[in-house]
Image 1 (cartoon, rainbow, N blue to C red):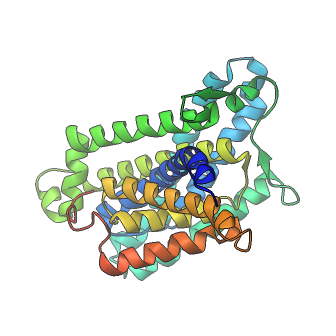
Image 2 (image 1 turned 180 degrees about the vertical axis):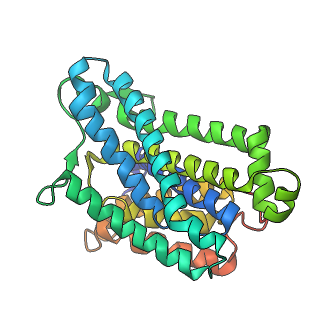
Length: 322
């Protein structure tokens, strides 16, 4: 592989890796916020992400496109509705699948099994609702939605509006979440419950409400990420949540589970690793190793990192914070 080809692909590879990594980061925040408060992995979060994607795509296709609004406004409405629906679903999952176990002080393994069961239930229910024979829902394309395929030239790289949308929405969400957690009374309540639930309760904080709000925020983040993922890859389906959810969970562990900055850093690193591997492996091996091996390289390097930093890259620095 020539140096000219390497550097010619470098900028678009970095941009693509960052856009994928930021989506992983947003999904990972749902895992890390719940873990920060309850020290519990909500494995149903990947299916909440999926439900958000399906609701967003269905809303666009059935309701918003006939209105004739600009596709950007249609996407904003779809994102807001998907975020709200996914947040409500996350709260319902907490209420009916996790809270009864929590109030009975069930062993930590039991809620984990419940989470896996809820994940499978959501997949099959969504498949049944959509159509078991053909449950995939394509993201709208053509017509006014060709807007998202148009590109803008930044000099060193050309970026389409689809990728720009991912960057803008995710950065706004991250900024809003950082402000909420660090500079509001609600955020202080979340951090207090994450540190010590018993003491927080004695200080007048309604722990149950904080847990519900945390699940809602995590679910809403997953819903937004679902719509963005469908926008980027062009389809929503009942089984779309597994791989992104697994990678987002890995990103959360890499950055330090329970750490908001760690989830973001872990997501970006994972996105860059797999994108670089997918782009350059075929070129470096004369197509003997294809793009499909990118996950082996990415996860192999992550294993090496975790061997030397078992708590994650930022795990120790924020061990008692959300």
